[in-house]
Image (tube, rainbow, N blue to C red):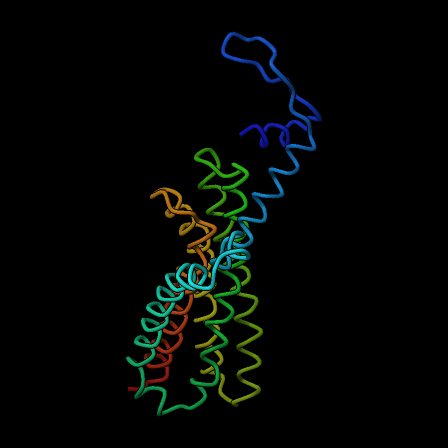
Length: 232
């Protein structure tokens, strides 16, 4: 909290007093910068699911720490694969779906990670709270919608040119809008939910945001293809 006050009011020093209001020392900007740098480093490593102490940890300790999150990631990857398996007959009828499918998921994953990174930083610096929560949510949804529409046009035209199917271009365009909206929502709501339950948003958000964008991306694209193109 002290570091946030230095940052917010551009302080270079501040007095330290005891419960009786007596001066017992001072804090200087150099000390605060060190604290902010340590927190930034922890957040950066946390987004990758690792900790700063792992550099000096034993092989077994590092393996155990990373195994837990890799196991969670494996479970979410299986979930995404299961969603794809629901549309195996659809994919067999149109090979182009298998070619385009990773594009939808990848775009959603990257968009979600961008929103998540901004949210995690805002939570760490206390720039995001109840007072501006819904304004930020609506802002991210608007950004997701605009990006979704722009990339829908780009991918729709590209798909039409590549595969000679305007209908397939329309399908991937609609899926792109859906997934980028899902990315915006998950990128901000998942870190907030994790902080609410006492988990570290910087450490756990990436896996869950990627899962949402993969599952929604695959389901939206393949589901729309099956319905719009009449594939069973």
